[in-house]
Amino acid sequence: MDMNDKIIETTIEIFTTMVMVDVSADGPPLQTSGTLSDSITGMIGLAGTHKGVLAIHVPNHVALAITSSFLGMDVDEINDDVRDAVGELANMLGGNVKTILSKNGRDIDLSLPSTISGHKYGFKATAGIDLVILPFKTASGTFMVELQLEK
Image 1 (cartoon, rainbow, N blue to C red):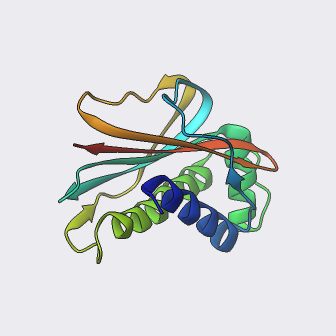
Image 2: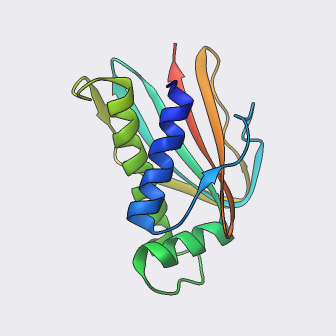
């Protein structure tokens, strides 16, 4: 099983068990995340034997649906609950990716999760990195998981 398959598997597992939202892969990997519109991105840094960033890019309407399911209550605006939920998703994905990259995950440290959001923004990769961007779909819409690793 290659890295992409493992990331797909772990993303589906986290959403199904922790968020109670069914997700599935939505086609082949993308070349770029493009311009993100009315979205929120949760990200976590990786340092150690592997350096990079794991990010989850979620359109606002999908973030609201995911957070509502995660917390078991209706959330109707992008607020701290949504930022915390998307940050926590990045954190859980980062923890699993750490284990995928390193047998015990001991030689990779994760940063605290952070989020950015906005009407329009880009999430650019620097040169000299391996880039994986995987699209996923839920009943409320699509989102992307992006992994940037230094070569």
